Length: 75
Image (cartoon, rainbow, N blue to C red; front, side, top):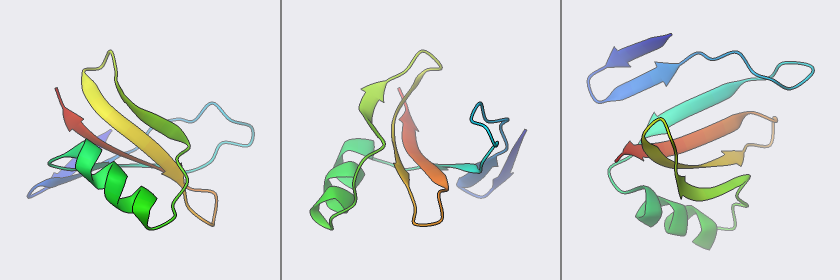
């Protein structure tokens, strides 16, 4: 399920990990620029930027609480 508010959307997806965790997605205007910016601040990537079949370009990180956060843009 996806809920939109202005230019932001929240996706609820069923995870595949055991136990199932939280996964958040945020659209950004320039995913590669945003990825560089957060890496410069010391954030480690969980999944490197790439073009996906869905069709999006995205990357993900894991926050200190174990929440996966995916940042992406349409391609």
